[in-house]
Length: 446
Ligand code: GDP
Figure 1 (cartoon, helix red, strand yellow):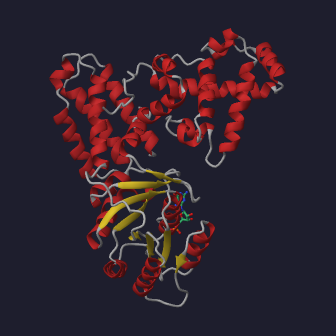
Figure 2 (cartoon, protein in one colour; figure 1 turned 90 degrees about the horizontal axis):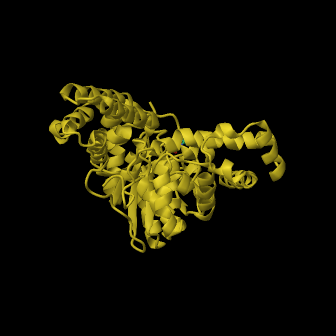
Figure 3 (spheres, protein in one colour; figure 1 turned 180 degrees about the vertical axis):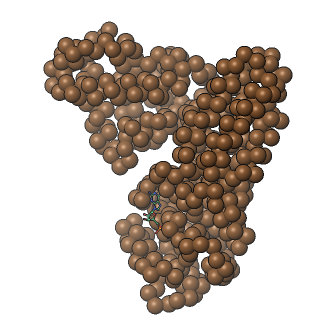
């Protein structure tokens, strides 16, 4: 089950429970059992799920629910905070400082995405003004050095490695020394992976860590690892001082619940997620927005912040109010598109809206998406006021669509496509906002 599905199931379970007239222990248990099943099927480990269930029971006071307080919100908040707790080990990961040499070592099983992630991590920091460098201490996998070299060259990041030396400790030490002398402030050491956890892998890792004294060890985990996540992460933690986790391949159909288990096992935070094979398909991981999106709440804090940057202050309350009423007309879509085009990086804004990014903006096609939005807006310019203010797509009969197409110099087929997009947004995304209380500061997690 992918994470979006998990979010949907949890939300539905809460919805079902809040529909019953009397919420007693039985109704609450049914709701929690459904959530437990959903979490287990998403590969969150069993002990974690059990713990979460009993914590929620402690937080949720049945008398409060019986007294008619907002049941849905109380339970949603309890689940929200428990999921956040699972993902937040309570201490931040080591953050490298500029102009002071930090050594960061990457560990993980072969195929987890370690080498790719090393370059992504280096590239991310390079853009932030660091001077990163890459050391290939993977002497086990033939081709590992070539792969790192290729990635590093593309990103213009200095690298170190050897085709002939078979001792990873020696290469790691030489690489770190070389780059310290060259005043690099972020020296990243890629280590060998194996197909499965085995003593030689751990011994080698221990030796590299001992010799290079890393400031941070990052455990890289493939999000599709499933229920094995907890044990695997724990095994690594027991051998080296893992201080952070990066989950890769979050773009695929992987379950992803293993992320929660990896945090629990390593007591270290997830700091980034990999969302594709390319260098920039790498996102900073923030717990609250992640869980908000998971539960279909949308990332209100980020979205409202963005709105506040571009929508004139006096128009903000009205817009939010309309959205929360599920009153999403074509005119609002037009205004929103206008704002979005002004907002800068489309990817950033869209990714805050649950469900929108994948459908409207496939990764790597930002320019096309921007052109598409502009095309839609031209067509909307040919609509009448009545059409723009209607939230009923059925008003668009054939003759109206032909008129809009003629007026905007586009094909009827394109008008239909735009209306389909509108219908999808109307149904899938904005209906989620219906009835949602918009908090004053936009922070749903408060
Ligand atoms: P290593 O053996 O752990 O060093 O793994 P690699 O870095 O060689 O990656 C294994 C495969 O996973 C490669 O084909 C990568 O392109 C791919 N990969 C790595 N990270 C991601 C990701 O976030 N998303 C996707 N879709 N593929 C990834």
